[in-house]
Amino acid sequence: MTAELEIVLIAVVTAVAAALPGTYLVLRRTAMVSDAISHAILPGIVVAFFFTHDLNSPILLLAAAATGLLTVFLIEGLLGSRLVPEDASIGLVFPLLFSIGVILISRYAGDVHLDTDSVLLGELAFAPFDRMALGGIDLGPRALWTMGAILLANLGFIFIAWKELKLATVDASLAALLGFSPAVIHYSLMAMVSLTAVGAFDAVGSILVVALMIAPPATAYLLMDRIAPMLWVGSGAAAFSAVLGYLAAYLLDVSIAGSMAVACGLVFSLALALAPRRGLVAQTRRRSAQRLDLGIRMLVVHLLHHQGTNAAAEECRLPRLHRHLQWSEARTRQVVGEAEQRLLVERTGDLLMATTEGRRLAEVAIVGEVVG
Image (cartoon, rainbow, N blue to C red):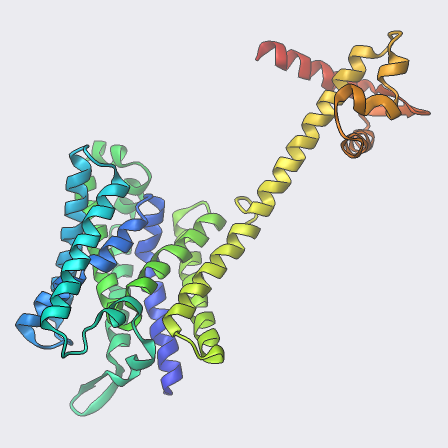
């Protein structure tokens, strides 16, 4: 297996592993907790390294995961005090813990490969050089095995706690009423987020961890309405972004992690613009259609009000209509044309009259306004 293929595999496995818990963070509107955890686990890694003096020790993984849970506990504690809002509690906790980690690194670990650049950006290009061997047999990159195990753990957790996670995510009060503990479910999910962030920390850095945990699930949120399809689509978007980012980094000779984060943003931007129901284009079309429907109702009400009166010759003639309705000429032509296509108005020369269907629509609109 070539180093390039190993890098892509590590990136894809990491992306999917991060997108799974990220889906629940997006649904719970706690997406920025991933940013807090991915930064705040740094002091746990540093302190564990002081005891083990081995960057590959599993104790680092456990210590960092514990620090991630501590981060969530501190955020929840500040939030529970009702003295600061959620965003402020996140902004208070993670810079403090992250800064402690940076100070510890600069003061006591300046001569080892544990620096702030690798923490923030990671370097996937070096991941294939850190190999795992068993009995003299090369088993492949250590990061691939680590993230593969975390991916399986995430899948197992979601499979086992599927109903509980779904219920607590959709309605925590109902979950508590049915005998489930929202706190246990919440901290279990946060443990999964912490473990995933720690596992991806060395290879991709904290910035890409946040991008992979949030952007693909947010993309799926724009495209899907149910949790199960969101998990699949989010995982697919994460894997696609990882591959696209690597190809861009290879062609442009730039940072792999940075390119993947940009790819996540680009994929999300496409979904934001083109999603069938929630996309900006779809929303613009809906607003345009609603504005056109409103214009047609105003038109037929205007025609019904003046039809058969002496003012009809003045108020209902097309050349003067835009003045009475206070519309632009272009909007008037658009509304009249659509109303004619729907057989709501008919034209005799330049005189407009509401048809039977048009009068019925106008009467319904008038009754609706009176009732409202």
